[in-house]
Image (cartoon, rainbow, N blue to C red; front, side, top):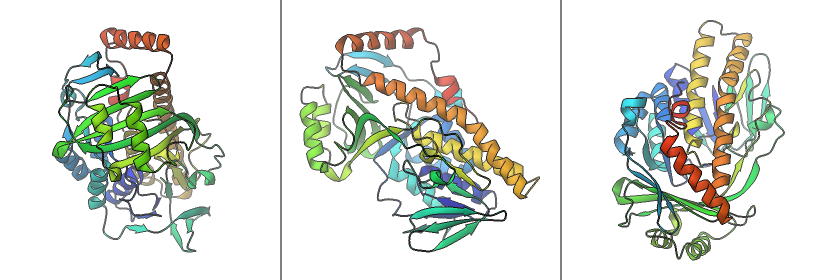
Length: 388
């Protein structure tokens, strides 16, 4: 089995396939720790999916990440609390916690569980070639690799996506993101907060070791922020939040430059197909999504768990080319609707959160307060209750 891309989705797929007895090779063009972002939140659905793929990795995540739940605050940029969400026992309800952690820590946990020698870096994937008997991956250095199936987990700008005939390109949402990790200052929201101002939102959550992970989203033109030197991008953001509530000004100003990541935010309309007889897309390659539901990594882990389960179930009864085609189609059918729903909701929530018109902001905040007060479970049941 070939996996292209050693991000979270690719590594989880490799672990799941290896645990089921398949020989797996993972290829990536760069070192897995060069571009691991800063922090992330794993929700109960993602952790349960990880448990199915690699129980040891699920155990380590619980031990080494910061466990929730915390009292979480939605606040205005002036510090007025709009909604305060009290702690809930997610483990009792969903059989898994919600945790925050460095992205690099999750990468380390997944890499530690990967079979020795399975990862090859410096391999920039170019194309896949299928025959009735095999699939061949060709890399930029002229080398090739052969396998029964290939999983394209090569991110937002996927090359594997071209192989399945998907001509759509990721679409820029008019929003850029800056993320960082810094020593946690003293402030009024120790469990984390989500602060909103006109055209700008900032999420923050504690990490282990007295650190805080934060992520800002800004209305912008494409490439405007990513092309800036990180130090200048930090200064520019610091100027925008100079009058925001504590600890945001200090949080931004004191984040080390080497702990900053700046990207544009893209998603994509639903692809007409995710698979061919021997190639499947997974994670951002199949469904890049905005970060506002915090489900990018969780959805990729779900993809991996469903893919591995269906490959195992199908090939156990029919390890033939028609059997493999059925496994691919079953995976696609199982995941497209859910991934599309998450992506659409993420985009809608994010776009509303970036509004600049003050009257629209007031109406949005009123609707949010009413939703939390009278909306029951909100998205929790369909989002956190999903089983892979």
